[in-house]
Length: 493
Ligand SMILES: [Zn+2]
Image 1: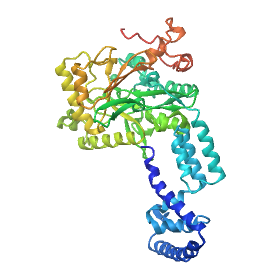
Image 2: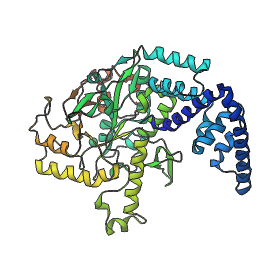
Image 3: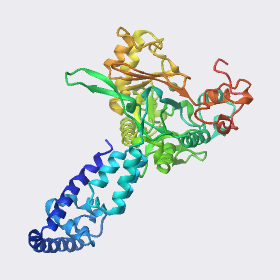
Image 4: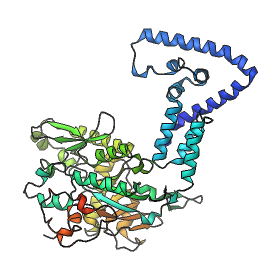
């Protein structure tokens, strides 16, 4: 998936190698020079005609401009004659830009792609490219395979942006204090985990479905290759719906596609205005990875999970909002537009490296509700949410529930069978153990660790309990947000 953007460049490089061989051949050179002169004349004429016809626009950097640049001029000319549409790749293709692209691929641990990019480039023979390739090959020889059964998984809910609003003494304060994480805590967790060598991977990197030659389908362990000292982990975020009840409590109001084409958030301010910025996990994680590309394995981001009953991503997409009554209370509300926008943001998340998941439609305990309700809920998620997100094969069970005990899912487990028939292959419960990964013939199951106020408070020495659930990840005394009311209520209180 990562390599698609380079397909066009590879085709260009092939033509580049072709042209170098030709240049070394004296007879061909004699033939080539007049052709190039003619081509350059045509290119120049096209450029002038284009400048006359239109004012400069952003797409004016095609083959015509390339033809006007210095040393790569003959190659660009040949490229132009072979395939005019590939001129922009030639224009981008300075040695420096190749080295930078390779460096970014290597930072994301894709040494194969970095080496391939440079070796296939027109500068493959340059000392700089060769030195870079040698460096990547050396690192590649030291990589260690990650045991997918020893990968931890941490999760969050919507992040609290304004603690004074979340912890204002109202009836929702207790729940926020227990189950949510503040922005400040989240950023400290990212930094601490980064400093300890954690690297974000996709759930799909741990294992994935393959079809054998005889047509049988099975789960295959992934080969996550990391330098010594690095350790893979998975991150997820539940209930990314910006529920109605959260309004005014210090959270983002919805996710949008930002001006740069990447996901960002809106938040309603006290004066009624709407501010756009990094008001939740997704844009904050993106910013962190932009600054620390080695925190993400080949572009991996988090798993983002949705229920359906209030809609997703802050858009009121459930059919219950498609009523005259709701429209009367919310002037300007356009149900079709809500669904359209939600789908656009969901696609934007996927394009940005996020994996999308079900969190059940009605935030139900999927192990305990009746089979009838289980089927109804699963069907509603498929009809109302999966029509926005596209096919999802991950379910993150609410309340840390599960559809079986810790043993592998039995073949006669009808809940597993039903979810499997709907395309689900990845099943996550909540487990405070460091690792719980089960790879079956047709599924992967993983336990997740909540990094919320409840978990963090009872790991603090001052709580008088001082569990140790978190010390492998970060120092909780440094992370815990002191603006929280304490003690954080126990879950049963
Ligand atoms: Zn939930």
